[in-house]
Length: 283
Ligand SMILES: NC(=O)c1ccc[n+]([C@@H]2O[C@H](COP(=O)([O-])OP(=O)(O)OC[C@H]3O[C@@H](n4cnc5c(N)ncnc54)[C@H](OP(=O)(O)O)[C@@H]3O)[C@@H](O)[C@H]2O)c1
Image (cartoon, rainbow, N blue to C red; front, top):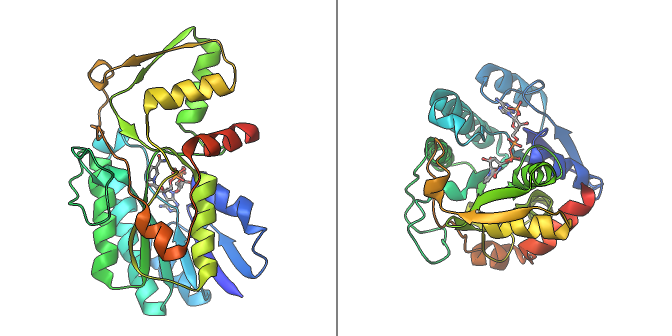
């Protein structure tokens, strides 16, 4: 029986893991969020791990408000980096395997080819910087860890682009959406399923891996697909990023190359439109 701690389990990914956990009767899950286990409190963490034996930590806890991170940088750094240091040191001490989630926003977006794991990182936002610091803390600790960088995460749980477009497209005749940021949406259920396959596989090869659904699109294409799939009568108009200024800069191109995760763990990845259809059915 594998014992697995999930942190930040009230978020999108954590909830998807909870949903799928019923399919893994040979694993014992402990789902926690900030109220049960605040990962920024190192004393609480020490006590928790002294009292509990785990084989895996899946760290879904994060500060994910990309724009707010520009001003709440200390808070973002505490959750995305300092707390990750605590977790990775504990993972090393108790020989627990750590699965941590990072982001495509560690890249500056100047590439025009899908990013492999070895391409130079250079985040352009505070959020991206704090997430990169978290990756470095893990690498510095020397614990057994898989870091999965993912992109454009959405789910039927929590707040995300899909739910925002659904809400506003029903209220307004037109929505303007940027078409010069290119990436790949990731249905959090598919990422959760991949994480659980890795846990199950007994093949834990530490390192950084990229994961998103297959395919490539802009936020405009993504929005159009959402309203078309739901037959919503709302015009989706493409605009430039410069016409929709945000506090945080985003990479213009952040498509991830997923060959490493696919070949290492023998994982099949579905197209983003497939993931979207399944998510829309849940909503
Ligand atoms: N969302 C995206 O588009 C995206 C893209 C690429 C990568 N990622 C990464 O994917 C991972 C999962 O993202 P997500 O969208 O599932 O995040 P999410 O929905 O924001 O969930 C994060 C969870 O962590 C909790 N949390 C915050 N501070 C905590 C603390 N100190 N201790 C314990 N829990 C804490 C949050 O609680 P509160 O809500 O109360 O703060 C929330 O329940 C994150 O590492 C994120 O950086 C996300």
